[in-house]
Length: 299
Image 1 (cartoon, rainbow, N blue to C red):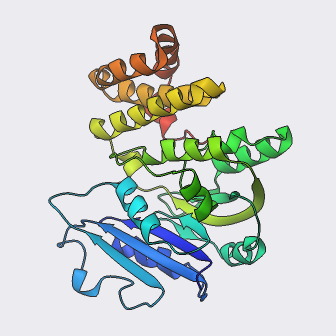
Image 2 (image 1 turned 120 degrees about the vertical axis):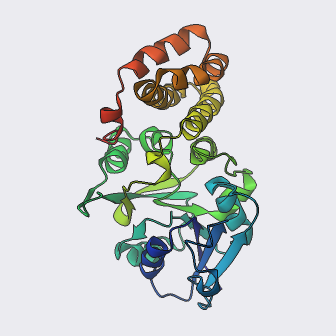
């Protein structure tokens, strides 16, 4: 019986997917689900797709005229998951040897979520602690409540999440081209009752050209802004909207730094979600965020 289900969305990234799969411990209690989001057959060998010959791996092919995005892939993976715990990983990231220890340590825990620390690998291959995530865990532990990590770091990876918790609270990803994990993470934070802040580092996030967060297409960044606005509306009644405001400022600021008209495209959505005065304050913050700062946003 599987105790853990690891869900990995994949798109045109077979080489990195190989590294990700090889970093997963060889254990009988791990189910691996790879969801291919309509990769290009000129870039991916579908006749010898990674994992199809591995009994631990379930491969789902989403075919159509175009990809449906990582949110769709992750939702599809959750539908197939049978483990008590769910972990998410992007195909270009990989796990550390500490994952094996973490699975043994928390397998029978009654928490909803276990938050882990992470490493980050630069394009040059240099691996360092991921400051944004690790500092948030330390801050949450110091303050005695988890807002810094539960609301402050909206990412799908680096967490052990109870499948029952997701089902009970009807938590799924938005099916949008960018920022699908923001609304998902906020809904988890709102529903969260019991959690653990672990010092174990279980994954390494790879910063590379071509990744979704490094893509400069304005439609993708606009999608991130929209997701932040949705999160803002969800968090405002709980007096948690400050973090969503900071996310929106950062994305809006990047759009402005790259090309001013792109930021204007997001303005109606922001004004509608935040109100006129709040949106103007958000814009003021956003104008201070240049592309050079954005690339180092976790620092």
